[in-house]
Amino acid sequence: MKFYKILAAAVLGMSTSMTAMADSSTYSGSTLYGYGYTPYMTVSYDTGVRGGAAMQFTASDISAFKGGKITAIAVPNGSPVKGSTATEMPITLFVANALDATLTDAVTFEGVMDLTKPLEYVEYTLPEPIEINDAMTPLYFGFQVVCDTKVANPIAVDYNYHPETDGPGDWFGEVNSKTGKWEWAQLREQIGMNCVRVKIEADNLKANNVQIMEGNLPAYVAPGEPLEFGVYLSNAAFNTVNSVTFKCTVGTNEPVMITKELESPLYYNQFTLSPMYFDIDCGGLEGADIPVKIELSGVNEENAKNNAAYIYKNYSNNVHSFSGGYDKTMVAEIATGTWCGYCPRGIVAVEKMAEYDTEGRFIPIAVHGDDPMSATSYNSLMSYISVYPSVLINRNTKSYGAQDPSFELLKEVYDLEKGYRAIVKPEVKNIEFNAETKKVNVEASAEFAIGVTGDYAFAYVLLEDEVGPYSQTNHYAPAYDSGMELEWWDQQGPSVSMLYNSVARYIYSFNGVKNSIPATIEAGQSYTHNGAVATNAVSNIDNCSVVLMVINRKTGRIENAVKVPVTDAAGIESVEAELNNEKAVYFDLQGRQVAAPQDGQIYIERRGSETRKVRF
Image 1 (tube, rainbow, N blue to C red):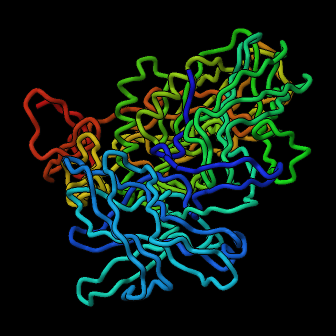
Image 2: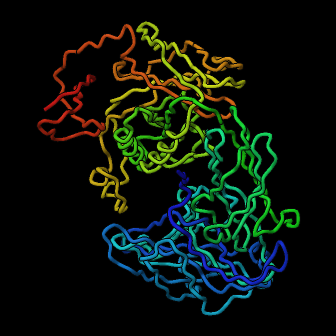
Image 3: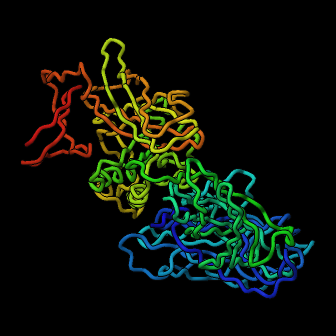
């Protein structure tokens, strides 16, 4: 099974015409040039508002492309909104000396977006080509459109975080309804760059500037089986990339050269939307943490040593290969928050995974940030993410990265991880709640499938269910008019009262307790450790569980984990408290508040500070 990282939402349809390359690092022809990466999504202004997007062709661009000419503006098609049957949307293209309040000096011409091909680039030919020379002044190229949120979202963005040094490619504008004047802003930190580009025809364009962005390498491969590696590439040059050559080294084996053809051409400032997969022979190697290194060594069958324009970026990771082993559990640490309007996506994914996981091998951990359920002991997770919601899967960031926690993603990786074998089997030997110290004490053990010398360690996480209620911001609500669908959420209001499950309350050592497992490990030997988790933030100890992890401190990965309810602990006596006279509030089993419970259904009843399950 092949796993695909979600790097973009749609295929980029650039159009270029190429002639023979002048030498190994330049070529003559045309390219689409801009600051935005691959289009990811589209946005809009309110209905009736005239909005627009533009990129600036700067003085440095003039210097770089001097001698060529600009012949067209390239704009990705908008995307129709839910329920729309429209197939076209008219736009006005412009070339301007400045993005001022009137655009009175702009040269304009008309175009039409094809809504049946969302996010595909379309070239709109300029009335006259623009020669790029020393006399040319910096210009703005863009388009404007009268927005209609019932028809389409017309402005494509790459939705990547861009630092301020990335260039002036993210101008977004709208006409103020009161003043009738244009107002322009840069929103790169919120939604990334817009995807407006210009078509440039020139000689001696930069070529073969390719790098490895990401890689997918499984944490385990069966002895004697090939290692399936997936790689994402990006192209920072202007020529089309059709093939690449890799130098692959596994452990102490001799390097192997592998040349692969791309499924579709790779153009300037574009990255592959799905990984290029190929098999690497492991040469019979077995053991733990076998190093794997992938080096980019050629583009379009040109040898790297003859090409000064290459950017090198190696990919390295470690893989286990052994016989036997244990069933593997998938840990999904999800960064979320009550303030995050898109975080219901993660809530839905976890609910659906609870139904899909019939073997008890999926452990979700909701790590809240900047809300009443935040756990400072878990702050280290935030160094791995840049947007909410995000998920780390077994902390295998080199294979999975930090991704959007959709059900489709979690299901695909879960199926993949279940096919691997774990090097270690963790077990909770004893669990005890101490009411005086307010700690849950855990006796942990770990058994390894093979003898290894490494740096493995235990980590302990306390989770709590039915926390709240708190209000969850919901950007899928009809009030936001986004057209996005999400199960039950797209029929609710902008704020939803919730009880939250799998909430991380405390973690004892994010990176694993150093020296909790010996450096030299024998196969089949059981290694024990006593750890504890604090319960100060807990509302109801009866709703808590402990997740015991074994972490590979060398790679940072979670090798395996097990989840045990705290109610298994000695000393826990669940006492039914007397219900007070406060009004009862009801929630379904997913934690969502219910206004009118239905007969025959089970609900969570919250009355004051007490909760219990009831059947109507």
